[in-house]
Image 1 (tube, helix red, strand yellow):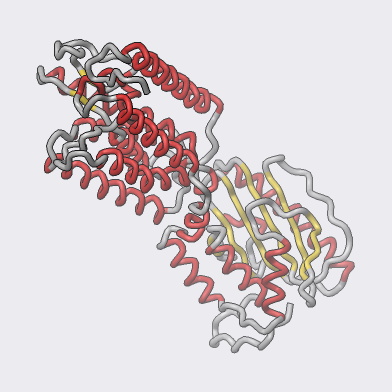
Image 2 (cartoon, one colour):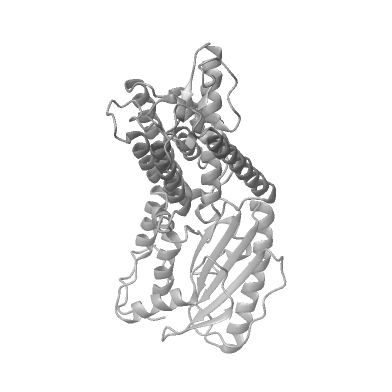
Length: 453
């Protein structure tokens, strides 16, 4: 690969710059693919070290080991082909070693020859969890695929695009610039890949918000007023019965209460405005989208449901111990569970999540949760016990369930999926019981309208 303009000679005593195309692709490796530049003297490279590659990048931790190496093949075709085959075999052996040493589940290697390599390569026999790919780039920028590249690494199209821009006159980054970009990416937590993932549409978040709004409209239609009789009949959580006599809470109300909201303003002193459901819907919009992009819709929904149950249990327990009444509605306990989930991101599950992302989410969760608790002390009729209980419950969920693989987590295991679907089934049953209870009390409870709908 030739450069549009020759780079300035390095200062005396420093090694020459790697080829331009290697530096250009390496910039993508450290910013987009979260790899680290390698030192050829690093003993972890094994057979791939000792100057065999003019530039390399690797991932040394986590469930996926990676190495991408660039070298200039020999001009003699009789030498270039066997040499690349030997490099691929060495890469396969290195990958098998990394599986054991690193504890990785897979190892991907991509070898980029910065020049033509004739002949046909055969994939080396190796562990099925190791994949070795190889491409060759000629001086015209054309890329030949000699072995299929592994997924989640630069594609032949990516390499060709970099080569084309260099041939068009764009200056290649210096090795120092690539190194600086790597340091900035590490310090910033690789925020660019995270922002890319946030482009997806958070369907589950929007669905939960829609459920809040639909149920609230049902409240406005069915309830005679904003009083507690009707809300109790619709599934509010309380340690009393409809007559105000102490009684065990109805089991299904530990779920149904999270979808109900105070039609009288939620203790904010603004009568007639649906501020309770507006605030909680906005909070779900902000927090839910983050959780869904980092953890996926399954973990989002199960954390909201389990967080709501934990918040309700905390509220009932404290009220019972204090020998006082409690009457709770609202999604804020489940939303606090989502904040608890973000708080433990990268602690036990998701240790491969970039440090910058994990720290940012942790600070965000602490700040938001603190605001909610302070708000609960300022505004009357806010159940702070439920808020704290939901946060703790969500944190416990985060110790068990991982974020998505694409952000540094892993896929849910079979037993985890079964548990998640079991929670869905139990929550669905609770909501069915709540609906049956509402239908059964239409026209009989003083809190309901008796006129035909």
